[in-house]
Length: 240
Image 1 (cartoon, rainbow, N blue to C red):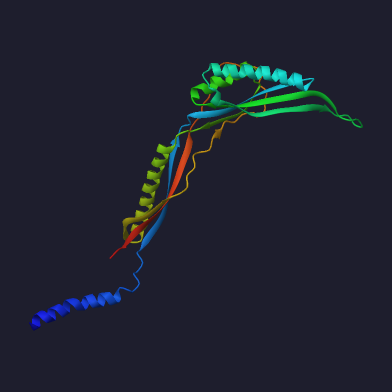
Image 2: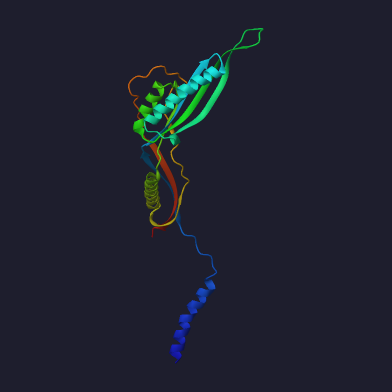
């Protein structure tokens, strides 16, 4: 019986000590913090084009009438290409006088200018060239903006996240080895804020009036870079 009693005490004693030590601070876990960056190339699949009709006449009414006639011709030509009304929207309409100044005299109005600009949402890049050509050959005389963008980047974003994590792991492993230890498990991961690549403008002579149309306008949208950053923390196992 005494032996059994002493065995019981021997077992309980460590438990009692453990209970007393449970309030002691737990030593921090050695960690390695690394930020990884992933990039993926994406090809634009859509574009927006700003098409303007600019007219000039002796009166505002005459300039506006001529402008409306030409703009209606432009819209009809674009609809003939298969563009719907939801792809054509007016974004600017401006009427302004053209004045002549002479020293010592009041300025006089010599003409009126009317500018009507529509935004064309092109959902197939193969239509960009035909849209420009159709607009210019039916009355438009200014292309003030052409921008390309990728409409669906979710798959590319996830690929960039995977690449960023792989790079973070590789850097963390290199750091652990350099510190004469090894890399443990992943403790935390945080994906940074993401925004799609902004529309990429095509360099153009802004405001240049185009009087003639040659053969079909060639368009090459190129590629855009989508990037994502992730912050990671890994367990560091010190060497023995």
